[in-house]
Structures are given as C-alpha cells and as structure tokens.
Length: 583
Image (cartoon, rainbow, N blue to C red):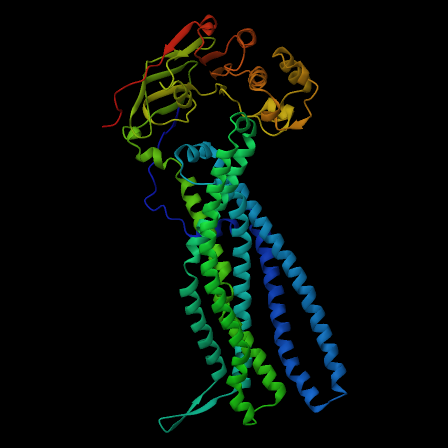
C-alpha cells in the first residue's frame, strides 16, 4: 500500500470567492434546523413590529383629530391603545434583539470552528506564513468572522423588515395623499399617489449622491482593518520578546518601528475622516430636508381642504416611513461599506486557505514535481534523489540517498545555510521546494524537536505533554520525566499555569522538550539543534537517556558540536549546492 501526499496542487481555474459562498454553508449545515428556527422567529417578530407601526400610524391620525376636536371622551381610549401598542413594541424589540444576538453568535461560532479547522488542517497555517500569502489571519478569524456574521444578519433582517414596511406604508400613503392635479402645457394632469413618487424620487436621488461621495470608503476601510491588525501584531511581538529587546537596549528602535506602524493608521485614518466628513455632510443635509419635505409636498392638498390636520400628520409620518424604506441603502451605507471590506478580506482568506499550495504550484523550484512524501508499508525511512531548493528555484543542496532504519543514529552535519534545517522540514512534509522523494513508514510515530520548542500558555503539564492532551499521561509519569531531565524543581508544579516560554530559561526549555520526547516515545526522533543551549554534561545526559529509553527509535540529529558524534553511528554531510534546480 502506498499513500502519497502531493507537494503541489493545481490552482482552481476560477479562484474567485463570492459573498454568497461565505453565507450559504451555515444555512445548509448540521445547525440549519436551529438556525432557520431562530431566523423564522425573528422574522415573525419583525412582521409584528411592522404591524404595530402600521397600527400606530392609524392611531396617529385619530389622536390628532381628537386633539383638534377636543374630544374628551375618546382621548383616554386612545391613550390606552397607545399604551398597549407601546408595551407590545417594547417586548418584541427586546426579544427580537436578544434572538438576533443569539443567532449571530451561533453563526459566528460555527464559522470560527470551520475556519480554524481549515486554517490548522494539513499545516495550512504554516504554508500561509511560510509563503506570506495573507496578512494577519488571526484578525480575520477573530474580528472579521464576528463582524461578518452579525452584520450580514443585521443587514438582511433590516432589509426584509424595510421591504415589508415599505409595502405596508406605500398603500397607506397612496390612499391618504390621493392624486395631485397639475397643469402642463395648458393640459390638466392627474398624478395618482404623488406622495409615493415624491418619496421614491427623493430617496433615489439621495442614494446616487451617497454612492458617489462614499464609494472610496470601501477600499479605505479594508486598508484600515489591515493597518490596525499590523500595529496590534507589532505590539504583541514586542511583548513576547520583551527580554531580548531589553538586553539589546532596543527600546528606541522598537519605538520607531511602532510609531512607523501607527503612522500608517494615522495616514489611513485621515482618509477615513476626509470621506466620512463628506458623507456625513450629505447624510445630514438629506435627513434635515426629509423633515420638512413631506409637509411641503402635502401642503397644497391640505390647504385645499382635502384632508384634516390629523390626516396631514398621518400622511407626514407615512411619507417619512416610506422615504426611510426607500432610503435603506443611504441609512445603511456606512454599515455596508464596513461589511464589504470585511467580505473582501474573508474572500481573500478563503481563497488562500482552499489553495494553500498556490505558491508551491507556480514556484520554479517545483515545476519538475517538487519533493514528494509517500507513506508506505515499510520499516525504514528512505530518500531517493532528494534535492532541496529555495522557493525561487535556486538549488540549496543535494542529499545522498539514505535509509534510516529503526534504532539507527544519524548525525547531520554541514555549514550554516547549507540546508540542514530545510532537510528536517522536507522530512516532515513541510518543504515541497526541490525534487526527489521521501518514503516514510505509514504507521511510524515521528517527532520533530526544533532548537526552541513550542510551549503553550497554560499548565506546566499541558506544556510538557504537548501535542497530546494533559490527560494522556499521569502526573507520576510527567514528574518522573521531569526529574530524569534534571527539572526536579518543576515536578510539583504540574498544575501551575503560566507563560512557560518566559518562565523557563532556554536550557530548561530544551530539557522540557527532552522530557516530552521521553513521554511520547516516538519511533523516529528528529533533533534540530535541540540541545544547543545545554552544557556538554547535560547534553550528554539527554542523549544517554534517549539511547537507554528509546532503543528502537531512529534518532536523526542536526548539530554543529563534534562531541555529539560519539552518540551516532551514521553521518550525513550536507553541502550547499551551486546549481539551480529549475532552468
């Protein structure tokens, strides 16, 4: 049996990602019943709110007519109706918002789980960082998904509610305002439902102006999200490397770098302010005119005695509602701009996640096939014609064919920059650039230990047992592994939580990584300068432990120290090649 992991994949013919392709999956997923149930409930609530608004519009006319005619008997009844309608509106508004937030978060939770799986699956996150395919993927998963779910839901439900409101109030406005008689060229002309047409024309004119003024904000908001994320990431890196920066006395340099990143925010924010000022001016002008416009439009028929003062108020309110409905695009423009920028970032991220090997497929270093990793039914790990290259096609090194057998000990040597660590990446399936093949045992447990091992923030036991869960090993097993690696002072601190990369010295971190190896007992152990921070005595002790406790494991070490040759029977010399792989 042979299992092949291709080093490159052909990019899709059409790698465009639509907004609909981002929206649709959740609504046909395993959560679709709950999602649609909540959505239908919210829609029903919105329809009831629209009905209350229609009923309040009719109440508005009755109330002002009662005031005009000083109807003392009808006044209390109208107040009672208003109280009931207002109470119902409050209840519906509260639960409508509550359920909308619930649905929005459930959608975000589903999206986050899916995107995390895609980002972390098949080492996609590593390829994105290695090939610099996307900026700030963490920000896209944490912030953009949250914004996408809540904003999409809000815009959709608001639009639906607006359409229902528009249909309801157009009917009211059409029947109440009646037709306007005008004379054109000496001919009398009747304009039925003229107030509806006036509201539509007013909104369309405003929408065109808003689109022209505010369109640049889409790209500016996209850029704003990017520069904000870059600045935040820079501050996080400063915090993570605080000690190294302090040792180098690099505060002024870091200050300059941080100010440089913030200057990009400043420059982009000035552009945001510039276009937002123009947009706000147009929106404010539009909203102020909307206050008086319906009264001016309805005045001719009111002064002609076509309807009462109460009806005039009802017409004015209905016109305002119809105008607002027609103006949904205007009122939602700012939100739409931010939503569009968010969608663009997620579309880009989705495209890259689904084609994570894009750079590999077009790189000169892989045009002849790239390095292929096969998992086969065998006990040996072998290489055949392995050539390492850089992504640009320049040759890095040629590796002689080797067969790494269980229990063997290999020392990989060579000058700095010759490709020793790159060889480790290739053996792990993380480096496709070059040519040749690697055959690995299909069921073998492999463990790669770099010079600085990753230690997750949390309990010491979780850091020790990584990538397995803390419950995989008993406290006694963990404590014993720490003690034999000369970390006895930490044996009683397994449940203590902390940032262990900061707490432990580089030497202690490497001894912890060695204890991790003893717990997991891999069949193939690859050590890339994994003991470089240790003194000769502690380094020798760890290799003795590996030899005694992992007698059947194959150990491949990358190291510069000649003293390690005593712990290895085989040597693999890696020399820098001068020949390019790709023509």
